[in-house]
Image (cartoon, rainbow, N blue to C red; front, side, top):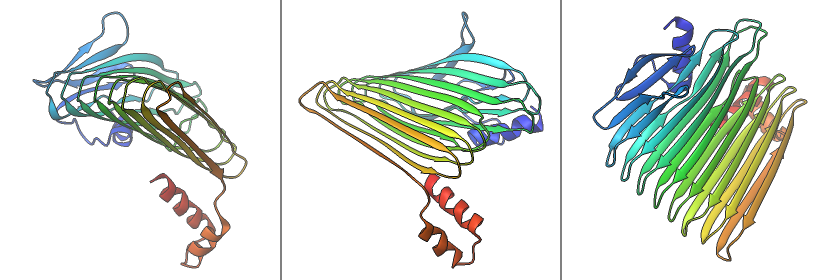
Length: 305
């Protein structure tokens, strides 16, 4: 891997070198490194681009890294990655995509990640998106996440996109069985003329299932954002979705919630707040010696922390 690809890898996966444990690293449409363990296998799909990650029942305290980097202008790819997590596991999965585009053609990565999480398993999933390069071609990412959660499983999902992605449509859907719990934290920032669309569709089918979806977003310059959240309570369950956003300059943000209770025992809540940075916050930080721009940056960084 060259210096640009290594920098992308560090930005999206925090890797300075090949990680320990199971991993599959993809660069410009090709696998450049793979490792498996006694409990985690990674298999290339035959019928389409992508891999199957098979985590054996009872696997504890292991991790899987599957980042993707693109540094070739004009490259477009679509990958399908399926995660089969057995019962009684405790694992961390680190994905993410970085695109460096210095050319005039668009570079695009679309990915569909499907999770099958077994009974009583605990999974932490981290996905970061990052763009760089001075080319006029766009950096486009369209991730789709499909989640199937069995009884008493737990998924903590953290998604981050704070720089350099010109266009993105991020779609997540989840179906939860009895006692399953989903926790999603999204952090998103757009600038320039970027566009970001985030959608969540959660079906709380199981008794005692729960979901907590929280999005924190900042839109600046002439960028646009759309947040869609649909949550269906189909049993005795608890669901909460929240969109908290800061709007700056000439940006536009829309938040469209939908909660549907199909059971007398469903408890669903949605919260949404969009607003500018309060002037008194800026003034307070400026009294400490910061310039207005520095104060603004400090507030945004704290909001997305």
